[in-house]
Length: 243
Image (cartoon, rainbow, N blue to C red; front, side, top):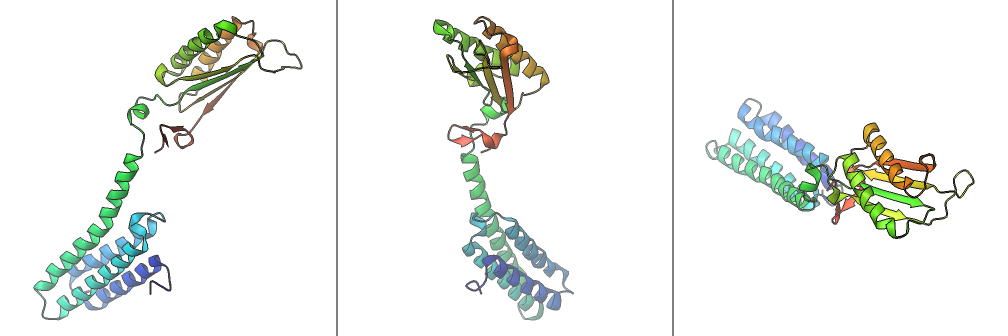
């Protein structure tokens, strides 16, 4: 059966057959409805699992199908045959094996996911990738590093994030024109995970404009674009902030 159709369908067929067996033979014995409920639940959960997960591979599903079949067989025998006392014990063992088979792969998968997640400290304290990029057609000369350090502090203060996570990149002396003129101007970009809003954007625009004014760049020739990124779109420390 597993060789001709998908493993998911094989599990579904086995679960359905077991359920029918319980309905036909065990309806008067309500305690035997437990395997039916767990069998259907196991089937639904496996359909909901993402493809490629350890709990949804063909081997696990095949074992699940055989387990469900065993539960149904033991239940039928226990309900009608001479195993009235032993039957419930065997059923509990089968159910324990079925539940364990489902939980163990999920726990392993959860462990792997947590291991790949970046340190929570940088997520919980809100310090996540504020970066400032500045391009200008003005030469900053030996004051460039002073400007960058001041801009770094301005980003941290305006966005309310620790400066230890702030990154600043400045490209001066670029070929940039504004309104057809090569007079001093600047193009700036700010990206951050959160903290992008009207108040913070206004404060940082004012701070950057003040810093560039020292290099004769007028405020009306400065663009500052703000981008609020999602965690899965920012990589850091070998992974994304989404894990």
